[in-house]
Image (cartoon, rainbow, N blue to C red; front, side):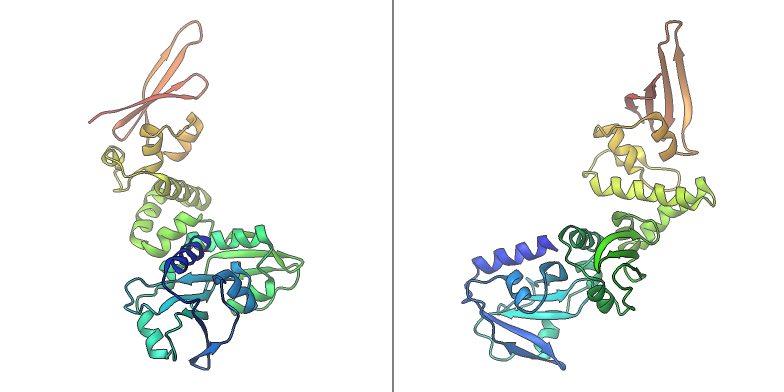
Length: 303
C-alpha cells in the first residue's frame, strides 16, 4: 500500500490543486467533511478520520475522465470507501459521478496477493492492525486479545497478541506469488498444480512447496530468451532452473533433486582415485555438473 500512497502523494504535490476537499460516504451519498487539509497529505487525512495509514489504501484512475477527483481511499482488503479527495472545484459529489470514476476498479487487481501480504507485514512491523479492526472489515467474530482470525477470503490465518496482529500464516500454504497465480491466472496455476501432482502424487506439502518455488522464481525472473530451454513435458516452464542455469542462482545437488523430483536423469559420472568427482544430470535441454560436495559447478544448455 505504501507504493500507492506515495505515488498519489506525488501526483497531488505536482497537480494544480488548491489543497482540495474531502468527501465521505454516508447513507449512499457523499458528504463534504470540513477538515484542516492545508499542506496535508493522504496519510494525515486518514489520521484525522480515525485511521492509521496501514488501514487504508489509495486508488486513482488516470483514464477516468474526471480531473477533479484526485483519489479514492478505501479500507484495506475491501472496496469500502473511507473518503474521496477532490479539487476545490467540486461542489457536489454524486454517487453517479463516483460510479463512473470507479467503473474500472477491480479489488482483486488493486489489492492483490502481494498487497495483502505486504499490508499484513506492515501491520506486524508497525503494530497498526488490531483484532477489532480486522474482524470488523472481514465481518468475522472478534477473536479477542490473543486469539486467531481465520480469514478464508484472503487465505490467511491471523494471530493476535494483546489485540495487535502478531503473526500470520497462509491458510493453504501458498506464498504470495503462488496466490497471485491462483487468484488472477487460474489456468496457469492449474498447469503447475497438475505437473507437481504428476510427480509427487498425494504428497500435498511437496506439491505446494514446488508451486511456491516456481511462483517465486517466476516473480524474480527477467524477460528471457532462454525460456524454451526450460519448457517441460507438461507444458510449464521451470523458472527455478532458468534462474540457476542462466542468472547465477545458487543450487545444491539436494535442492536440484527436490525441485526436479522425478524429472532428471543421470547423464555421466567421473571419479578418480584421489577423490575428484563430477556428476552430470540432464534435465530438459540442460546438463548440470555437480562436485563431490554437491555444489553446482556449471550448466550447459543445448538444442
